[in-house]
Amino acid sequence: MGMVLSNDRLTDGVYHLKVETNSGGEMGQFYMLRAWDAYPILSRPLSIHEVKEDSVEFLYHVVGEGTEIFSRLTPGDSVELEGPFGTGFPQVEGKVALIGGGIGIAPLYYCAKQLPSCDIFLGFSREAYRTEAFRPLAAELTVDVGGFILDRVDFSQYDHVFVCGPHPMLKAAQLKGIAAEEAGSNTKVYLSLENRMACGIGACLVCSVSCRDGQRKACADGPVFLSEEVIFHD
Image (cartoon, rainbow, N blue to C red; front, side, top):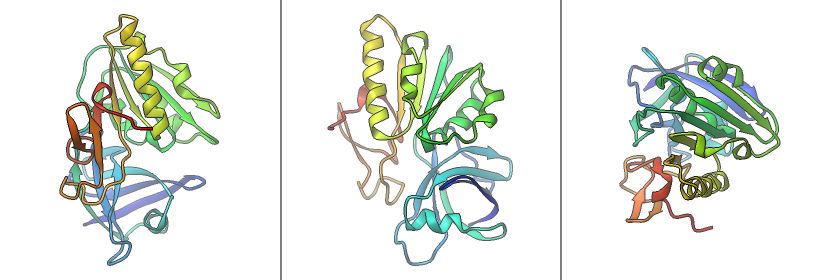
């Protein structure tokens, strides 16, 4: 159980939640949160946005009943949180690009704080948010509103690329990684999948991911996967 320290609205439907806890976490991992008793039945998975000594922070987008309840939380309210869960982004060396689309920017802030240097690319469909927080962490920061942020990135210029965003963006990032490899680059592309989750520990199979070696679980084996491992069906 954790206590809400703050829950700030950043823009329409997007909030920055800080919860008091000393559970910590690694870049790319997530927590399962709930602020209700019986309904909705399932907790909601939220990526770690920031870890401090006595708190964990999250960004979330209101998309249903659970996140709508989160949006009404005020300082002092209790939140049930379990975690951290999952396999996150690896610690890497070399030139790194972080690419986030919309609420997919959430896990990249903590990544940027853990890496010695990185270029950061943030894309938004309508309105940008939290960009100034990223600025001091980036060797170079690129923000795009209304376009396609992947068009601003040359994958072949990087040793490692971390990507988080909606499904079509991840599929497009995989194709850009393949193109970079075919051009002779050794770029490693890592995708953080935003699959629906129920348990968070790999027991229910709701978050199944098709991979080259068979079905895997986004919550336990991921949410971060090497791009070359994932099979996109649409």
